[in-house]
Length: 261
Image 1 (cartoon, rainbow, N blue to C red):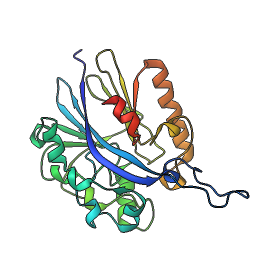
Image 2 (image 1 turned 135 degrees about the vertical axis):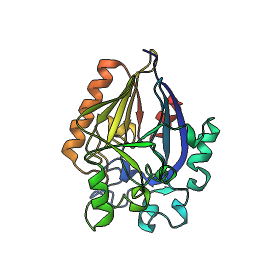
Image 3 (image 1 turned 180 degrees about the horizontal axis):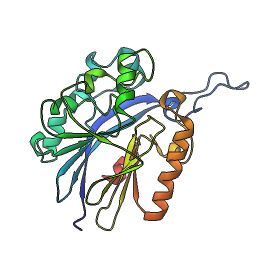
């Protein structure tokens, strides 16, 4: 087997209160009714996965106009992608030595607005867009009704795209690339086990925003579709890490991102 090669793309920084990311961070108590808040920096990233079969893009980042009114104001107030305008998908690919035309397939871990904002670049093409069976209908349900999650924008994914639907708990995408269904943050969240040469990479993604989540501290309720499913997926990730010794890549933890890069 020729092992996959992975290039990590830095897609910019999001600023947010840690209470959204780690539940209960700033909680008032009887003796401390005005706790300090931690307003922190988080990372947005994508992957380029080179296999003998094809070049795969993992996620597409935020829309470059996120801070210019493209994202709804309440969402941007909570999670401000402050440099989205400096991180177009085409520009960040070029910085890594790639072009949009080099991409043979796209895997969407899920369709939240900080992951699906670049899908428009593949509209009208025959590039397959892999998404889990449980994610696509929930994204449309959320974006087109007042129910579900507010983190989906129809304008991100409601295009002429060549959807490829992933079913089940795991899916063999390419030699050395196994997709993993990790419901919890969303119903169709996917991670991956990538068999790099002598150094497997476990893409945990938004199953755990930061290391505290991976250690078992839940994200805020507003970031979870199902807490029970989230805990089951977390246990699965930890089991895979123990079995394989894989390096982990978390959803938005800047220090973990920098160690992988």
